[in-house]
Length: 311
Image: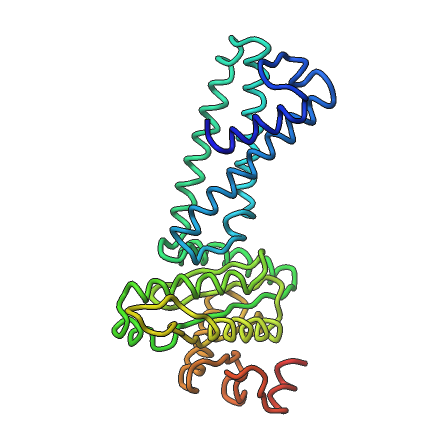
């Protein structure tokens, strides 16, 4: 019996007041029995999620906990598995022959799980567990069109790790992969659940901020920049904790940016300005030339630029 199965069995025995063998009344014959069945099954599911999340965090420490335990598709799948397990148990107690009738839905559920895994693999970047470029563009194109139709706000961030080739050459590609994973985790934890973070390849990332104006996106970009600057990456070859910085270009929807390509071009231009301006800073589309910079030290912005950006 698995750990989660053992927890389920123990929890159910405690709630109904006795252990197996069970009859149909003990399982679902009374409101208390139905509640006990639901609570016990939920307890086992929680234990399973915790165990799986723990293993994944050991293998990929940078994976955000929110991604492990609060993914909507995964929760729906777990609920479906849980329900099917309860129905199978009741059928086995009531009339074992009925279990044969459950084979088609069980096989269908397993097929849907496999499809979901393959779909996730097709949408995900292997090194960072972020959206890959194709999936990010697909979602972003749809969200931009929706925002334009509804007159809503939306912004895009392009983020590039500064001097990443030098980092790889100095510390090795394993350290580079750890840096990518660390930056990916910081990005995911710095945005809202409804936003979309993707890896565009190499050391470049993209963030889609739903419902965000350009000034709001600038504040998010500065928070991301500061968080990544404060990261302590794993020690490599006995050295002190390694650090990286990022440059960020920000572009929001506007008269001259009404589709995804225009947003990306504007954000890329702003990113180039951030690089040319010394790196480890944030630049905004259209304001890149006269915006001093959103400080790499946190809050030193000229009064004129503050008025232009934040109001």
